[in-house]
Amino acid sequence: MAGWLLLLIVGSLWASCCGESNRPTCGYPPALWCSSKEIAQACQVEKHCTRSISNSPKANPVSVSLYYESLCPGCRQFLVLMLFPTWLMLNDIMNVTLVPYGNAEEKKEATKWHFECQHGEEECLGNMIEACINHLYPVYAFPLIFCMESSVDVIPSLPLCLKLYAPNASLADISACVTGDLGNKLMHRNAELTRALQPHHEYVPWILINGEHSEILQTQAQDSLFNLVCSLYKGDLPVACKRPKELPFPPIHTSLKKSAPNWLEFLEGEKRVYQSAQGKARETF
Image (cartoon, rainbow, N blue to C red):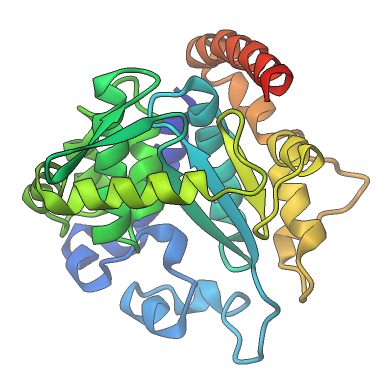
């Protein structure tokens, strides 16, 4: 599976750099090691991060917001094969916001909100788990959610994903959030954020770039988010964005396809269903 290929690469780098005994001292996923001098020191990777860490002011990062559903095949494909790999390479010039809700519906029952999701109760549970992770562990949230979404079974993968990406996080705290008032309020907030979108969302994944959505931006993001982020960033480009034009890099999902044919074949089939629904949505709204 493509997601697990990336997970194993990142995990091996983490182990080779810091080792098991140093994880509590570091306490940050590999994608964040070069985000500040303090984190680089804690994770013992200062020499590797000298180019990434600078005291000079930077331009505003490119903002990428994903409105999605935890069990939506098209959403999972974009998050796992496009958004997360791009963030791994360009996290110092981009911000990612994840809003799990999508095409769900809510209604007030007594003192709580009740949710109905496009892919059933399991998706509602997955949405709420990921909303709680975003709230409780913002530093680890994206790697954890990537790990879950890249798994065959999204929800059962949570305990293993916590061990791999956030060993100090508490499964009990996440469970308490999901079953308590906090998770209910977080999902209601996601519902409000989704309804407030302008233009209103018509399908998922629904992608905003720097707070804006258009068909052109959506297509560019789904075709090559990496190139889009590099082209929009106004500051000094990182080395990853300065690759020679004569050495074109294939889209990430193309290079991963060879290593994960079965999983990708499944998602490609589901993507066709999603694209059909997307077209019907455009006709309806």
